[in-house]
Image 1: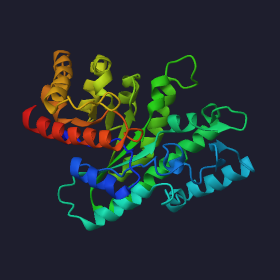
Image 2: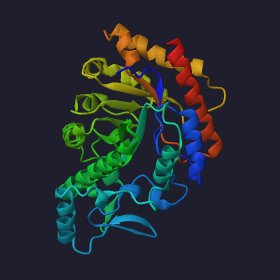
Image 3: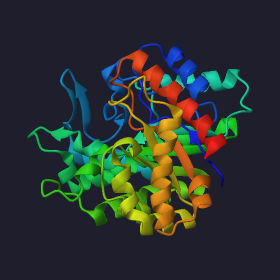
Image 4: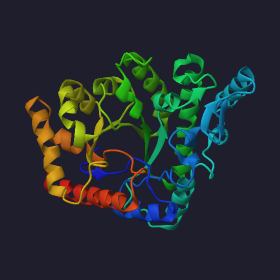
Length: 343
C-alpha cells in the first residue's frame, strides 16, 4: 500500500463549533479526514472522559471522572454480559460526549467522497485511559489488573462501534489508539513494562484484525518504539518527528522488519507547541529526508520508506488557540503536497 505523503490529524481541535472544525479538516486533510474531538466545548470531550460511557464503575462529577462503583462486582458482571454479547450499541459514543463525531458523519453523508482514501477514527489507549482515572483512595486504576483488563475490552468495543458506524461510507478506516502515557514505560515509577504493552496491544488489535481496518498507535513523546513495532497487529506508528526523530531512527532494525511486514510510519513532523509561521513545507520535508537518509544508511530501502510514509501534526491541537491550529493544519496540507511531488 503506497501512502507516500498522506496527511491525517491526531484528533483534538480547539474549536467550539463542530462545523468549523470539519470545514478545516476537509480542506487540509481531504484524503484521510478524521472526526474532531472538541475538549473546549465540554469536559465530556476530554480524551479520557470521552470514552468512559458504560464502562464499569466510572462516574463523572464536578471534579472529573473517577472509579466510584456502587457495586463493583455487579457493574463488572453487567459489563461482561454486554461485552460477551458484542453489544456495540451499549459501547457507543453518544452525541453529548462526541458532537464532532456525529457532525462529521452527517457531513460525510452530504459531500462528494471521491477524494477520501481513508476515514480516520480514534480511541484513547488503555494505558493513558487508566492512568487518568483514580479510585476513591486516589490510586490510579492502572494498578488494578481486573479493572485494567475490563477497560482494555471496553475500549476495544468503543473502537469496534466506530468501525461499524463509519462502515456505511465504504472507505478503509484507520483506527488510532492515542497513548501519550507510553513515554513512562521503563520508568521505576510506573507499573507498566515492555511486555505489558506488547500483550495489551496484541489483544486490542486481535479484536480488530477481522474488520479490514488499519490500526495505529500515536505517542507524542519518546518511548521504546521497538516494543510497538514488535506488537502483533499494529499497522501504523505515529511519533513526534519534530522533536524525537533522532531517537526514533535508532530503532532501524525493528523498523525494517515492521515495514517489510506491511507497517507504516506517520511522521508527526508539523510541530504543535513549537509551531511558528516561519516554518515551511520545504524545511519540514528536509527534516524527514534527513531521517530517511540515516535509515537508508542503516540498510532500509528508501522506496519502502517513502511508500509507507504518512504525516501528521506532532500531537493533538485541542489546547492551542484556533488561529495556531489553523496554521498547523494548513502547513500540514502544504507539506503533504510537497512530499508527494518532491521526495
